[in-house]
Image (tube, rainbow, N blue to C red; front, side, top):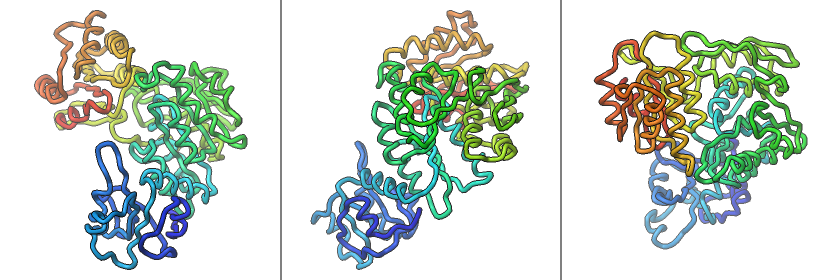
Length: 465
């Protein structure tokens, strides 16, 4: 973190110093005692099912220089007894709000470009690609793991340090107003919307409202910034009309400002393609599976190109990128079985993309899809699972195993489309699916594993490995 004095933290959070010296310098913060380092300032976050105040004493025992707190009553004081003179104690109204205010304050001190990335699918993959590409020439800070919400975005900003040139911030949402709040903290200067689809449909109720939620990033980009949109997405014209900044598009359409063409997929499902741009053309061979990643690579290219990275660096960054865990992760078991672990999350669009990737693998071996429930789809839950089952048959899956109550409709859709009933199996749990797979798998089989995060289908992959 960029070093801040206690006085600056008090100013940023509107806090009250109860103990310690205002001139002390803080080099890092922590919200988790499991990863806290000696010298960190601990900020307790209070949620629906946890309260970080329970770990204040633990934080000091692990070497924290002090902590923020929402309360400082007699009961809490008694836990610590006599505090050391140098221990920092700052009272704030709310821990989460203090974390966000601190990040917003630090963002105001930084003279860097901030890339905000949102979209229904492809956010994390694009962020991973972009971080690898920009790192060829620049000092980059980017969102780790699932740091894309009201806690993760501030933590990403607070990672910025001396010499940081660019921040890449992933922004997720589950309702209207949430991306706007994240943008107020991060103040992005470059905005990217990968696409608009049926994610979190349960909370928003229509694709139009999902598009409205994504548009909050577009509206947040200042006039001297830039917005990048997917030309092939239905909602792009609507999003264009809401931008104060310049808008450039990418896609496969000839209407795109930056276009991919001549797409080929090798025997393992890895795409290669040409990118056409006003700076010149490059040929890219992606090291990751799935032709849908062409869009993510193209989005990466347009941002890196805008930031004037040499074409050879962009090409090298794309061709050496790796993705976060459980995103089309290619694994091989000791028994020679290939696993496509895409279990991090799922929605109708990403499910189809993963199935196409499985179908693109050129092999005489058996292709098995282990698909679990897609959550947060609301009133379209039933039809989305049923239609996905029909698509399973179309892409040439040999065996389908479903996991969960909702995904039984995937099985029904597959059966109605003509899949052999002996090759369609429905399970209630991942444990049951793993047991069946371990009995039936043979050397050379290829297994796709995908479901919504709460289904924890990575346990199936772990059992096979």
